[in-house]
Length: 453
Image 1 (cartoon, rainbow, N blue to C red):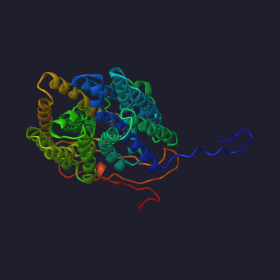
Image 2: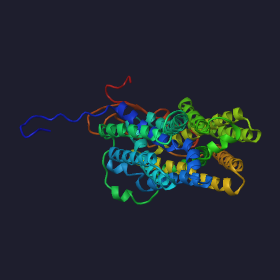
Image 3: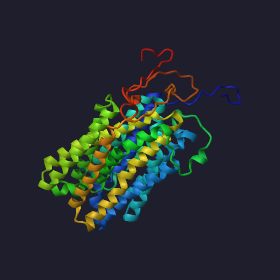
Image 4: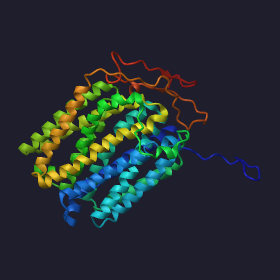
């Protein structure tokens, strides 16, 4: 590009592939952190504005409904217009949500903020998830499994600490998040695009299920555990603080955030520990741990043991991480590049269905069906049954095929001349739910100059 005087204008500097990968991972983390940040504050809002547990779960649930709507409408948009504009617009909406939170003076403002937050999150998850896989398939698939849990953990504990020990408890956490979102927006402007534009953007906005045929069977089999793990996270996020006060004495806001942190941090660590395990093994580990953890937690509520409660929550966290990771690693490698964002959006659709809607039912049980303990028992039984259903499904044979010729994954936007190598290793290793007998062999995508990466 040149000026009218003939002088060359250098192209704008772009982030390298690993900084861009880290930026997108941080977007996922802090979007989910923003979603869990209000959890330690619900008791304070409830005390100040005198609303019932049903209202708490409705405030929590509208977020999930908004996420679902966004996933249905714009879940595949970044496959057509590119990742950068979708991510940037989502950050702007998320920043607006935390501004509304910081100035909230009643339930209507909280509802408005949660809806904005849900729309932003539902729009960004498919774009960011696909964007990370664009850069590096194996690392991107792992990041898609670990960042939601890590973000939820960061938001729950960070908000709990700020609410308990910092000034302006209902404002400071949102001001910090706003600053982070502004920095991330600047980073997205500097990020190279990793997805080529494709026709059909307007057509993609029609409500539809963008699900590759080869992924439908495996997704159906892992759906119960995805529902179960996110339903459990939703319960801890909405009614967890009230349940913790039944078995633990201490700072309510901090302990409420600590319970959700224990669950989701355990999940994030489990994803890292099991990243090389076969998807079938990971799923089985997750379902067994989920059943054991929920059982221990309900026993702790019955006997009033704080130690047993957090032990059970930590074990359930192993189930949370392993179950979700096993689902992601079973299904995502089956998609072609142009199908990734849509498939991830469907997976998050299932996740947020379990995350939000059952919590509203739990709120009704709290008020009209016997209190938070009764709600915990019924919720726990439902989660256990879903986990057992998923465990049974791992023993049945099925067949699915990984796309035969996965594309070379480069750290830069297509057409920039970069060459790269990607070993489609553990992320593309689809075992158990994806075929009979041993897993299919996956070739190494080697390009010149990168043989020894």
